[in-house]
Image 1 (cartoon, helix red, strand yellow):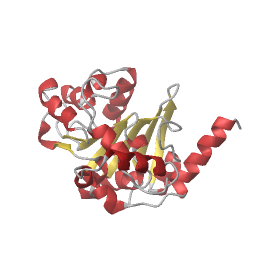
Image 2 (cartoon, one colour):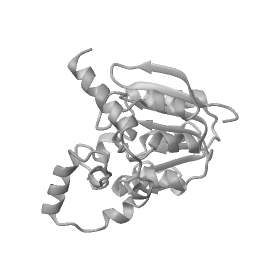
Image 3 (cartoon, helix red, strand yellow):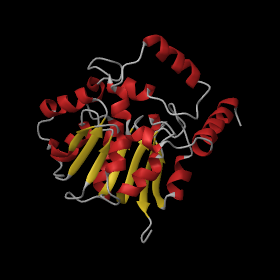
Length: 243
């Protein structure tokens, strides 16, 4: 095993098995983000969290909530449907019906929601922490029915959602991969999905790699299809019946 692979495996063990969960912290992210803190204290906190990895922090939330249009991760970067997006959309179409309740988790400006709307889907939901992206969705993709689109962090949104509410939940890219392991993201996604979870993610990439396949299996989800696309993996899970 290469040194890089050994390092990633260790990080996955840390994130999957050695990190405690802090549900209430993630439930109140929006409230905590509004609290003003001195910049020097923030720098000290950032330094300490490199060592106190098992404690929750607000840095990733702050970063994504403050992204502007032309930033490296601003909404303008996510306007077009690229080849990976098309792979994800095709898989959603294959597994769902046009009237199914479908959640785009961390939807940003809504390029996938727009594509699905144009295909005839009528019961779409979305949530994202970046309010600018949500507001721009209303004028950029005017065909999207935004009554079920919310500006909120994914964790608090999922915690408020009743079990088996959605027929399918999907996500693309570094969305769930950047949610700290101090929140049981896979548990909550599986809880709110009645049928399918469809991910297009880099299983070994980004800030918080973990044993994604193990976590889904633990939550009564069967991997019914997977394929690697030179980096990102398409993972399609179906909920075990009577679970």
